[in-house]
Image (cartoon, rainbow, N blue to C red; front, side, top):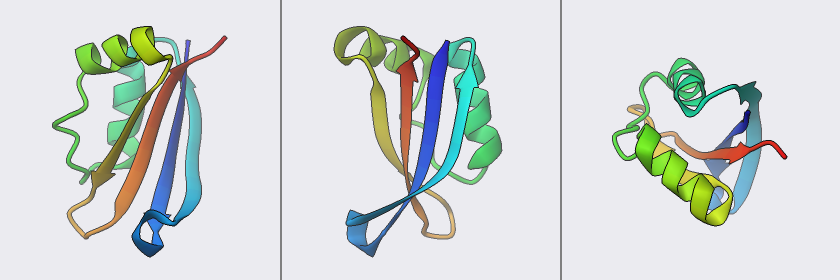
Length: 81
């Protein structure tokens, strides 16, 4: 199982406002939840293999993404212990 957290970044990243906390059984389900919550975000750098490698190596996956309207978000996908 994986924890998913999406936070809105404001003030040039100095302020982080939590928006979504969810769980998923697989990495693919986590990516689908992300796509549902941020449909206009550029998630080209977030793929199942990249997430799984990061989780295996450093215990979580973190990436900042931008939406078409200029919003910035931090995405964290981590295994549940």
